[in-house]
Image (cartoon, rainbow, N blue to C red; front, side, top):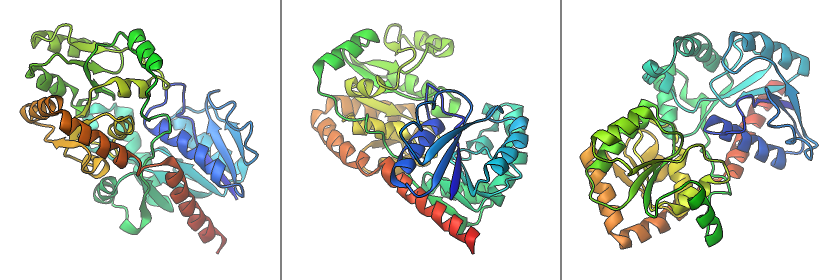
Length: 367
């Protein structure tokens, strides 16, 4: 059978859905030699991907991710390829799909937080995504929490939705090579002791409240945020007397990110809403204690390995940070529990479960 996967969101800087798509395609083409895989690409990032994979090839498409043009081009491409199944690993799918359709819906934050998205995104979600989700043969999602949200907000029947958890890339592990740790610390000008946050700065990520909680602490740790300096957050830090203690790394490469997790004394992720929330697990896999939110999917994913707090309370967040930083025994136990929790999630298992759904849908086509 010919399976087509939309991989247009994969770029040199992979985050979120792009990372999910890459790892899924990588493992599927490794474990499934009998089906043919075609990846739709909008750039050259995957140029070498199919070189040593006889069951995989690339198909270049011109339309941009989230555009009217893709609604015209994708059906024509799929028909020309004689696709048996199309997997959209994001919320983007052609409204008129000429073959079997599977979609991965990671969350419904477009519906819960429409104010954070432009008018085009809102219209797209309402008039393209919702009808496509209802037409798809199966919906994959990344947590039981997201499954309940999809049922509630999109009206999808429960039996149509399959939970396949995200995995953790093998690069996220404990690193004990001192020369690597030292070189990365120097290159990013990282302080000797720091608390780390990894993620974007959208309002639901709750970074402002994290800075507020940090301002309540009396500690020699700094707070390090991945990414370029944000004028709004810099101003907030200055007003709270944190000048010099809030550090921005600038752009961080995929290879360096695991090293930063390893260097951190504590990872804090106080997000208000996550369909899955990969960074806390990545930190755990690197042996770093984690404090995260007690909302949405995060308790499901982090289990009992993280300290869970009310993300709306800067006081509770500050108290949890203070407790972990001061209790070495607690830190040690959280590291051990975190490594065990992270080991439960693998992209190989995600791919295996996804392939089972493909086969079920394709068998339905043959009947």
